[in-house]
Image 1 (cartoon, one colour):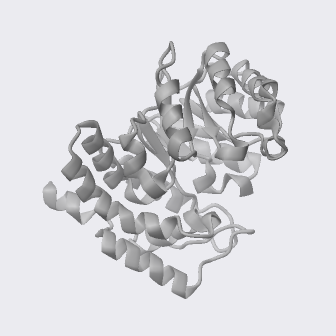
Image 2: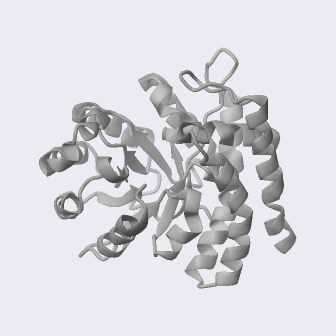
Image 3: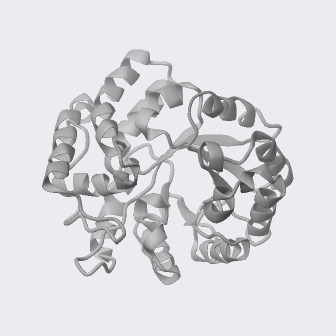
Length: 320
């Protein structure tokens, strides 16, 4: 049963990283410490686990269940937990949804069935609708659809149909840019029933939030959740100068974390946590590989320019 009944995803939602030992096994103690650190950030509304940021692609089913269990044990009494559903088959996705609800998750983040979307599945709306209906039939949990960009995105007409036909679909995590991102925000948040767009455009977060997204779901929240909360609140309050000042601190991390190749974004975030003393080591599972010393130095320079410390951003500590 969900620990936070009737949870609706909005606001600032960090997606946490996953700590590993040198033999690539999960370092539960370090992962718990990371979860606790994020859970103590004031103003966040939930935490996401088993997402891109936690290398879900490299975790077995048993490991994913264990990750959710320790996350619930560590922070699940004070914050809703959103569990990622990474599966290319609809029945497998439904099975993950069932055990997620039984364990105590409060919401699901459903990744697209990637082989289908890579082969133009988005051009056949019935496929996306069937996928989400199969999952929705297996659970009462609210569902966030991960809206991949451009060629792998569910078409707007499909999204409108999904909102109409699947009552527990309550949000998208939007990875699209520019006019399409703004159209998602304007149209979907104006649906006949409550529906939120959560931006995941952390490389240009302030610009995205000013379009009116009702929240954000971000892997970089594993490092800068406090800055994201401050930025979101400033934008919601219409405080442009405050938002710009906070964004000036976010900018160095965004330039670092989201530089090419994008596949290293969470690798860089792990190294940032090590440099900040928040994680003991930055081990990643293959095919990801450890950053070079030169790349790690670029991470160090970014967090220094951003004014990050173990406890959080110094600009926020001074303000407090």
